[in-house]
Image (tube, rainbow, N blue to C red; front, side, top):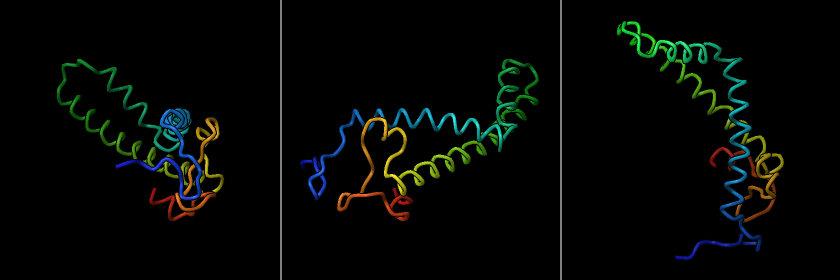
Length: 127
């Protein structure tokens, strides 16, 4: 089975190298946004993780178990925040410009295979 090399209207698909480049650029941006978001919305996350690493090797097993539980809880909050930030970032760019900053930097865009232009909201959410 041969993969599609162009869209239905003849636009060539981006190479995997360009896609990877865009993904890496967007990844750096998202790490920064998530860090800022965590500092604002889950400020105890970074402090709890730091406490965990400071206590590594401690002899008090009960205290370590409590700290592990706290780290897990804070990590779940930070993970949900990261998911929301990533979803909002992608959906906002895909529905307005059809390009995230990473895609802009490497000269590619997101589009439906059957028509050019930014994605509609439903398609962006499904993607």
